[in-house]
Image (cartoon, one colour):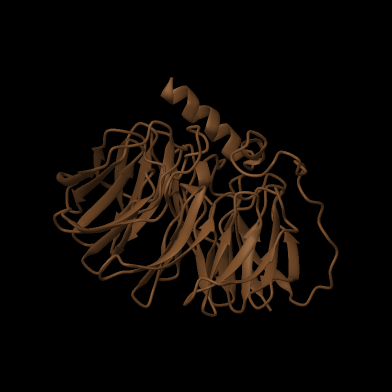
Length: 386
């Protein structure tokens, strides 16, 4: 019964969370349920396509569980069918491609020369970043719906059954395991763990953020980011599914139907909290934290105080992906394949471009004035912002 409920909620979440509001988890049911029409505005910035390649298949991952990464001038990306590619970030030329014989739902994790992806059956694959050759494979107890965290010593995978597993980076053997008591009902998604120095930071479906020693998995501290509210299990969902952001020893994290907060990395002490509901990654820029709320309102919060600076609801219910900061702008893409640039100062639209009609779900990569976008049809495109 629990699995059926989770799958039901997943279908709602992928469709933009509008049905959740209709069910009463937020709002009074009187709000419009259709996606907002695109508003006209004067373009202030030019978005130029530099290159595009179709090395991958369809993208069907939940909440951006598969994400491209950029390192040393190479983009590493994967699709839902088990294909993994390395592409030159300057030219779009394919360097190598590896086809794994399993559906993927989590990745790409990258550390040193090790690239890690994971599947819907709990399979974990480690590849050589230079060549795509498989170094080892391992198995965890449930599907992996987010990117593993990787460094030279350990690969950390969060599975959907509430477990964090540390694997030896050299051979994939089990090193340690940390487990929570999962709530009765959860959304189908998990937060990507984050490695910082010798500390691992992870968010869970019970609304808690924890810090573990990366080498041993021992608990350093925990912080209750979100507290369940309401009478029904639907109303009490407080999953942390988006990636936290670490800036100057402060962790910014957010949950579904809970709170967004700033947490001291060293101690786990809460600095400030504000009501929030999102399943997406957060972004940071110009001293502000950016989130895409569950109704696709884009919000900017002052990083040092939690004060709301601005919000933009003109992309409501357009199935936005996670925000990314680039120069002085905030980029989001939607389910119809439009790329939107907003001013980080006041949230106004400054540019728009069409990526692909199938839409964009994967988180985007920003590097200087370049933005790399993986669309749902398998395209990978580089844009320059001028």
